[in-house]
Length: 300
Image 1: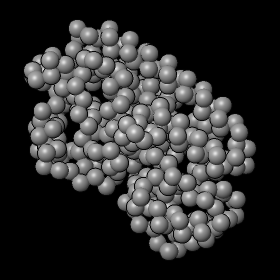
Image 2: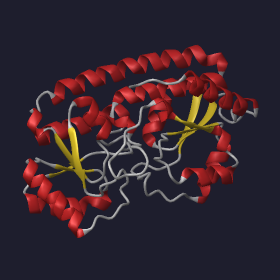
Image 3: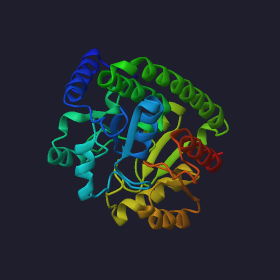
Image 4: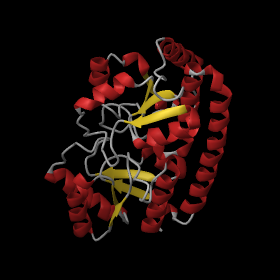
């Protein structure tokens, strides 16, 4: 499932090499690569690979929803200043392409999900962009990140590869921990309903079934009709779904109403952003541990 073509890697390295030859944007960062990541999750993974050799800026603030993000004037400046721009990709950052064009930064873009086999959803155009919901996909992210950083900064290529290998071990430990945790949920209870279709990769990897969502879409922006919500409530009742998972405040009131109508709890999960350093999901590893614990506790 997790295969990356040689052509994709060579193309990536070629593009980043051109960007690096254009300057690298390291002058004001003590020789470190000046890197921009679109989301806090991407930024955290890039920092694990780049370590002390990169200077990272995050485009979207903590808590921002990429599906609904409205770019700010300073975002164009941030894109222009970066030497490499790492995006989650797979259609997540729909706002990004016009910004890149305005900043003259199209050739700086690296989409970290390039090596992931993307999932689809019946009736939905496009693919599921929430690739980080399976840590095995994040291992593929790291291969792309390490290749890009190594091409732009060959002098530290061995460091990037070593950092990636060390973090891959942490991700494999996380995967093993998740498998152990979800074993507490019986097969008949492994039914996932959420505000939008965010749990597909998690479901495939860990033996769950993503049976429905409020928006019926990969996006949080879709507006369900009263008939669609009634159909979802009927499905929740007929299948015996034990919880509805909410990932964005904008959908909280609808989820609360569904929970009240069906007699199940509405349970908060983190979606496309980490928390700040004082919160329970300040790193990707903590993000996944929080979400898995919440899912298991709600469904077991």
